[in-house]
Amino acid sequence: MSERSDRLAGVSAMSLYLPAPRVDLESWCAWTGNSWPKIRAVVGHSFRVPDRDENVYTMAATAVLRLIRQNDVDPREVGFLGLGTESSTDNAAGAVIVRGMVDRALDELGLPRLSRHLEVPEFKHACLGGIYALKGACRYVSSDGAGRRAIVVSADIAEYERGSSGEQTQGAGAVAMLVDATPRLFEVDLHHAGSASDYRGPDFRKPFARHFRDDYPGRRKRLADFPIFSGRYSTFAYLDETVHAVEMMLERLGVSAGTFYEQDIKHLFFHRPYNMMPIQAMSVLYVRGMARGDHRHDELRGLCGDAGVTYEDVLRECASAPDLFSAVLESEEPNDPYPATTAIAGLVRRSARFRELLDRKMSLGAETVMDFGNLYSAALPAWLAAGFEQAAASGLDLAGSPMVVVGYGSGDAAEAIPIRPVDGWEQAAARIGVTRALENHLDLSRAQYEALHDGELQAPFDYPRRDAFAVSHVGERYDPGFQDLAVEYYSFLR
Image 1 (cartoon, rainbow, N blue to C red):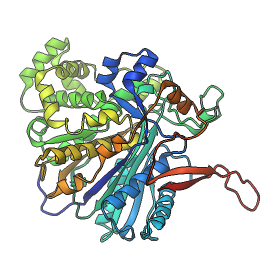
Image 2: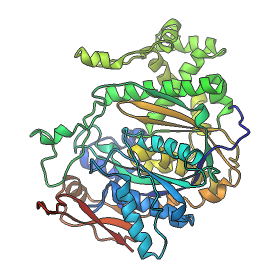
Image 3: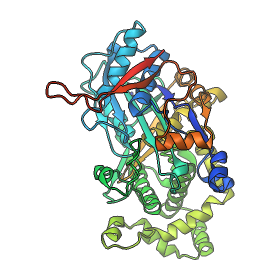
Image 4: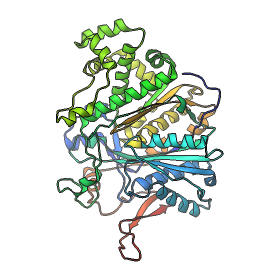
């Protein structure tokens, strides 16, 4: 990774909030008849579900308040509060709702409110909204917001129909990040970041009109935000877009893929909807690195023979730019755009060399996030937070170590961004609080989970909850002079 003499903007602190209700996936497998060994390997160990009086804004506000208090942030110095989410319940307001809750809690705590001169944007692009918000915050503190600070919070609720192929990949939570021109945790190198996007039609969508269809499950006591998705097609899109973003980053860095993966980079963090997805992405990148590099071609030829594909097919796929959406427009079943590469990637994932690479490059925080579930826009920041906390607890020397974060949002778009821990990062990492957030859990029975999921739960669960936010009531007035119909009001639980 090329060196820069000037300092880069980046992240000074992080905080995490997970709702207490938890579904243990081994228990879920017993309820549903699924294979626990398979679910454990592919998905993880558990996922969280928001309580009846929680939503994306209460989780985001709780994470932001924790960030401010854990790091002694003066709220008056913050000039930007960006919310990345795909779980909004209001089509007009966004981050300003989070600001409202935080301000009132700060009042109760005897602390100053956030600056009145505060930008409050919301960023939406499926699971990539939080990374777009982070880029916006870094640009803010480096330009017109010079001398001020920024906060980015990624928050989401991933929910799927019971009995669907996505049910085991649910989750909920929020991660907040403090962004400074001179960061205390890690720098964000936007100068060498790689971006990629392409329109993929029905790849994981949430069209508003679905709520008005009689065959959509939303007609129940609780508003459902289940996505419209095609798992196989979405996987192809994820792999394709991630590859293009990472390879653009490598081109801007001026490094070869083989050298970068094996030697230059110390740790990699991908968008992580479930455990296997980033491993699949890395194996595809690894094969393409072999094909596009200036060595290891003989090894690749051998793998081609083992996989029953030709070397020329792999090279042709590396140079191709497939249009996945065209098959959908032609009413055909979407097919793997890189079948030869995928076949070899499957062999690579079983090799000792690749497993050793994963252990060196992608193990930080990996076991911890098996208990997060899918956090959508917060999934990548949560893995990053877990990795830094583990590194600090283990006494690792990360200062100056090149790392990469790879974000992805269905629809679809991807970002590959180099980051670098700064001197003294350990102090900031020790305050993140991932372990504390995981300790706050309430294991649900099958009946409790199904009642909460289906909107049949009559009241929030009874468990200790402090320094968090909740929906207190929902407006019902629809008069000519004043209206608050369906507007949510919030309370601070001290």
